[in-house]
Image 1 (cartoon, rainbow, N blue to C red):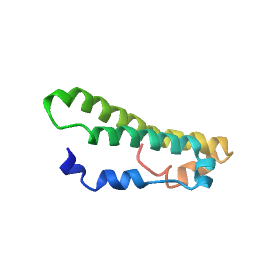
Image 2: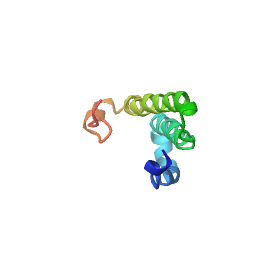
Image 3: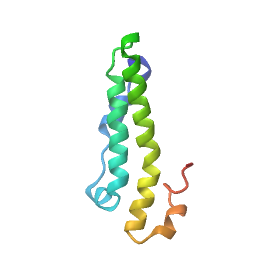
Length: 96
């Protein structure tokens, strides 16, 4: 797993958000960080059969959190009173 993730996990660890983004889209950022947490943890597993159940669980948790990013963004837009603008935003145009 580590060979496939070479460089990817380093990039993912360095992703950060400006305070204004966190303040504006808190649920969205939270779901992204949750997805990142699980993705990084799976890259730390030693690739062997004993770790397969943990890897499967972590990947499933990552995917659930990643999918929830779009829903969280919709919630943030609604909280901001901009629900009508969500569908035309970059996040809104992502596949659901």
